Image (cartoon, rainbow over all chains, first blue to last red; front, side, top):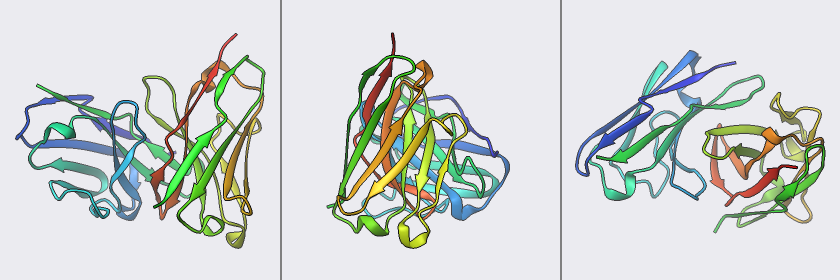
Length: 110
Length: 119
């Protein structure tokens, strides 16, 4: 089973700053199989990035993903007030559990 | 517009059963692979299981913590996904989301339905 470890656990920043969130896998993950989600309190997760670096339609271009192998990064170039939330990475594997999530990074207002 | 609307959650005693439903609209449900993902209070996301479309074999896979207790099924005539949960444990308390694994990621998600297992 591939374990995803996200860091930091909590990130305190101010609007306008740049956020860098990390997701490290215990084994190599295909870039095609790495995604990022945003979750706000009381809401379902929302897909932000798929295939490590692609954005779905409607996701602002201040969100970007990068990385390969075991190290992946979500970058928010310039934080907006609505970006403060919890972020999860997720990978797909070929055997159960087919999908695993990182434990999440909480992005809070400083 | 793609919509997934979950229902059926509630309070159940340990050892009890509950069936969740997820009504889909806005896409061709019969062609879609569907999944359940849960989130315990204040915790992260945990994949529960996946059912493929019938045209892709209808295979069902489960996460280890629920295998043998939970059953995923679908009724393509009603555009509805189900999660039958038996032998419930307190650690099954969570919000349960239905979602579609588009490719190897999940999008979109239903609004979630809360299951509380408590005596």
